[in-house]
Amino acid sequence: MTLTWTGGSQFTGYRIYRNDVQIGTTTSTTFTDTGLSAVTAYRYFVRGETASGLSSPSGTITLTTPNMLALSLSKLLDPASRSNMLVRDIEFDSAGNIFVTGGALSASFPTTAGAYDRTFGSGGSSAGSFGPSDAFVMKFNRSGQLLWSTLIGGPNHDRAYGLEIAPDGGIVIAGRAGEGFPTTAGVIQPTFAGDTNPNAAYGKQDGFIAKISADGSTLLWSTYFGENNYGFLRDVAVDSNNKVYVAGPFFAGLAHITPSALQSAPNGQHDLVYARLNATATTVEYGTYLGGNEPANEVAAAPSIIVTPNRDVYLTIVEGGNGAPTTSTAYQKNNAGGKDFLIARFNASDQLVYATYLGGSSGEDLETHNIAVDGSGRLAIAGTSSSSNYPTKTDAYQPAFGGGSADGVVSILSADGSTLVASTFLGGTGREEVQGIEFAPDGLLYVSGGSTSSSLKTTSNAFQKSAAGGADAILAAFLPSLKGAPYLSYFGGSNDEQSNALAIASDGAVAFCGETASSNFPVTGGGSTAPSSGETGWWTLLQP
Image 1 (tube, rainbow, N blue to C red):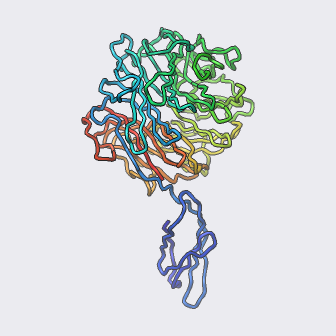
Image 2 (image 1 turned 120 degrees about the vertical axis):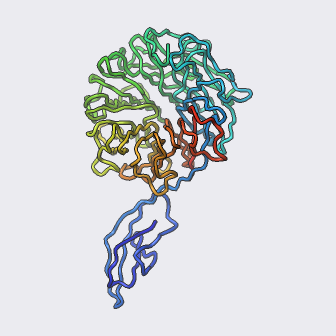
Image 3 (image 1 turned 30 degrees about the vertical axis):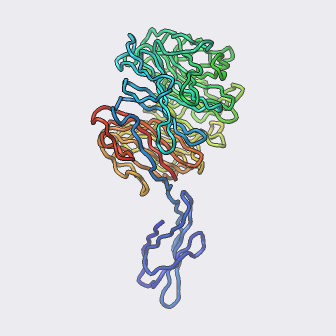
């Protein structure tokens, strides 16, 4: 930490104090303090001394040291081919290994011997304009070595959005699937439900949930989750009993709504659905709709879900209308305009603890992996807002809208959903999309996403201080108060990048992932041999 101050001609020297203890002297007007802990607040003042022995103290300032993360590893997932994969989630297991999942759009996707499925599915008649795609799971060790890689899919369009490591070691994924996706006997929905309203890009779709063995060799169970209209799953969580929790947008008529549901039918054209399955996916233990009466041109979309160790469930979705079952003490009981965040918490007995809107007058948006929960039960949400009046705090890191078409936003709600504890914008003169958020062991709140702005206030310890061109991925670490950001960096090459998710290990290591269209994306270990066109997935590891 380097201190600089304005001196006076009457002073012949200066004494420097940290936390009221003298730590050094100097005759200049700068002093570098070393040996400090990362992300720690220190209080400083300087006392000037004259030749006659008189002294005068300065004012006191408090400074927080930056996060000391360093880039350890950055990898392209298929450096030989650019198979146009989409990487949607990343997780650490208890041993520190890294898992990634998403959608593979090419037969050249790399798989490993002994994997459950090494053959890319194609030839279906209802894949949509994006064409055939398979879900995939890859496992790497902390050195970046690929331990195993498998596909899972049918002949149409399949993609995973969420991945969780179950306590029994299995890997649970959830997402969208077309006709012909592999399922197993005895599950809640072994067959495709049909789709009378197919999406032009993806074709006919249901949601899916699948569990793969810890070594990637076996499909333990797999089920569809859908109804005869367009719907899919966007996120998944697993509790300590290996029960599975999912969230997605669905129309009316879903068979997986239970009699005890908070909301038995959608209030609008379609709503968020939250469901809990038993550990083998043979029973839906609880299922409910949750949403408002959004207009026909608004879509309730992009949910995220988290389950805590005491089995409280937190959910969020984008909601374009009023009428959602908000609670009496909710921070924001009604939609403020356009699409707002709708946030809910259920307890382990399936009772609604709170539900609240959060947003401004112009509209907010989410993708996936947009919420985190701290040890006190406070929910943090990260998303995108085009509202200049999105609710923030005056002492926040960035209290005002940065300009451009949309900024990232990061907010923290009290455990009962009644109070906005902290809230900030994260944006510049372009557009920011934030989709990835997690609390670190040291209390910092990390977010990832993408930015087209060249004006973000990157930190001195950033891996990449300036935008490289197009849209770059971004990674930021906020203080728990959201009053400062000890780390903010771009990550990217001369074309477009986006980060879709991040994960934090027990030792504080941070991994995040996404896609790149750049031929010069920053990678470690000799660079990329990939062709210069097309997209590929990537993941990057930073360690303290």
